[in-house]
Length: 414
Image (tube, rainbow, N blue to C red; front, side, top):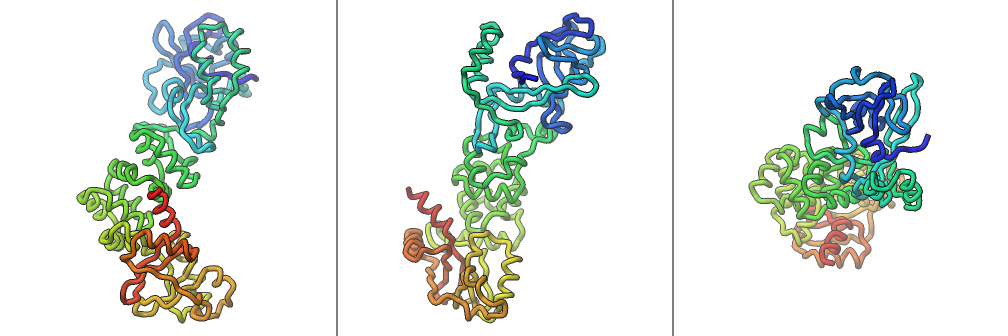
C-alpha cells in the first residue's frame, strides 16, 4: 500500500459503517509507552464534540477514514495524557536526527499502512520529512487540487529520516515521564556529537535533553561542551544531579567546570559529592587554569618499580579512569617520587613475570606544576607525547596531562 502523508490525513473526512459522514480527523495519536511507532487512534471532530476512534475500529483510510462502527460507539475525547499527538507534538517541532547527528525541524511525516488479521487498518510512522517536499505539501494543501499536487511533489527531492533515527525533545519533565520519552538513541552517539547537538538547541530544549542522559554519558558530553554552555547546563540542574554528573567527569575537567561556577554554587555541588572525589577536585581548584597543574588530572596508573608486568595488567583491568591516561604506567617509589614510565606497548611485549623497572623507558619527560599551558603544548609537540607527568620540586608525582588536554588548549587559542 502507498505511504500516506500526515498532513493528508489531518482534516480527512470520517465515515461510519453506514457510509454517513460523522466528522473530520483533528489529530492522530500515538501511545509511546505501548508502541513507539504505530498509530493508536484518531481524534475526530464531530457535531457532538471530539471523539476518539481507535485504529482497531478503522476499516480503511482511502479517500477518507472509514469506521467499522457508528459514531455513537466512539469514546468521548477528554485528555491527551500519555498520548503523543502528531500535529501538536511533531509537526514544526525540532527533533534530533541521531543518524545525521544534527537538529532538524519536521515539515511532515509519512505513515505506512497495512491490514490486521481482523480486517482493520494498521498505521505506523515510517519517516519524518525535513525537506522542502513536506513543506510544499502542507503549504499548498487545499489550495492546489490533490490530483495536481501529487505530480508536483514527486519532482521535489525528499529529505526523509527513518522514524527509528528520530529522538524527540520534550521540555516538560512530567510529560516526559508519562510518555516515557528517553534519549537512548542519542546516548549511543560519540560524546562530541552529543555535545554538538546540545549546543544547537535552545536553552529549554538543551536542558530537557540533558536531563534524560545517564550520569556517565552526560559527563562525557559535558566535557566536550564549551565552558559557557557547561555553566548554563549545570546551573539548570539540581545540586545532587549536578554532583552525580561531575563525579563521572575527569578530575581536571570537573575542576575547570566548578572553577567557572559562582563559588556558592560550586560549594553546593561539592557538598553533594563523595568526600574523596570532592577533596581531589578541591585540590585541583587551587591551581591556575592556564598552568600545568591546572590542566592535569590525578587519575593515572602508578605502581612500584618492583611490580611485575602481570600485576600491571591486572591493575589496568581494574582502572576506572579515562582511556587516554592508560597509555603509560608510571613507576613511583614509596615516597611517591617518580622514577620511570612504562608505555603500554612495551608492557604488552614483555614477559608476565618481568619487573616493571626492567622494561621502563630510557627517557622520562616531565614538567613542573607551574609551567604555563604554552610550554606544555611545546613539550607535547617536541617529543610527540600522548601523556606528560607533572612533578613538584621534590620529584613527587602530582598528576598527568594528556594529549586531549593540549588539543583543547590549542582549540581555545585558535
